[in-house]
Length: 331
Ligand SMILES: NC(=O)c1ccc[n+]([C@@H]2O[C@H](COP(=O)([O-])OP(=O)(O)OC[C@H]3O[C@@H](n4cnc5c(N)ncnc54)[C@H](OP(=O)(O)O)[C@@H]3O)[C@@H](O)[C@H]2O)c1
Image (tube, rainbow, N blue to C red; front, side, top):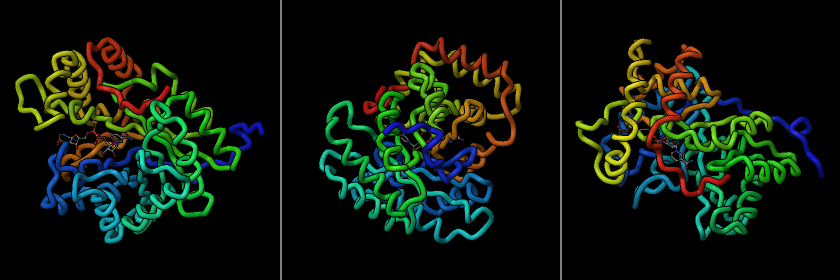
């Protein structure tokens, strides 16, 4: 059956201009989380929703060790307690992991239900990553299970993550044959990571297919905030190791971002997020405390000029280093 974007039902969810990422909420290993942060994270949630940042991205694999599922549980707790402006617009989007032991259609649907019970709701279920790069035969059943969640009215939308244009078209066709629209696709996208958006033309394909694009790690894991430099303390563990490798090669980009931000009287984080918004994507910066959330929300309500965008694009394209790509990202 030939299905075109015109004959496919349109997604019913329109994403806000910006969302909030919650990978750090429950992750001790990479993000230094501890439970004493929970009060502050609830303030982040409340402030975001009240200011129109109503999309929250999580994953059923988020949380380290005993804290697995903590990000979803916190979102469940905070969303149920929230009373204030934009309550009806809250959108909780989880990513269901393509674990090697998650093999059948039913296992994927059950995973969606488990996330739903941790959060008390589930608005968008996303496939966390494609298995095309290593177990291509695994993917079809998991996608069918994801689509079942939509078909059975258990979620308002389905989304994908880490897909390139070729594989995206393949899933789009599979879903279209069941009349199921893809609400969103999230990929790593920032001034430090333009593949696969620029190099593979992914945004154009999303626009053609009516899929909204979410930019994950839009602050380059914190590097684009400017707080980590050659002479400043780095985060502990893996992130610190990565930053030590990247910082010398991205100095011109950080300098350019700092200058553009200063001329605008904005912070580097706000400018980096505004760049994502100007590219037509919905950034989902992670925030670990209220100050970060407040600052990030200052990326809304203004736009970089075409000249500023061009300067940032040029400097990013000439950067010696880029963020490492997700190993699951397909073409
Ligand atoms: N689909 C996928 O495979 C995938 C992969 C990665 C991420 N994601 C999603 O995307 C979300 C965002 O990406 P991310 O969390 O990886 O990285 P990010 O948004 O690029 O960076 C977030 C980190 O930067 C720091 N930060 C944030 N705002 C700041 C501010 N205003 N000033 C100073 N520092 C600030 C915080 O860490 P510190 O304070 O510790 O520096 C924060 O945790 C995740 O939470 C997750 O929901 C999805």
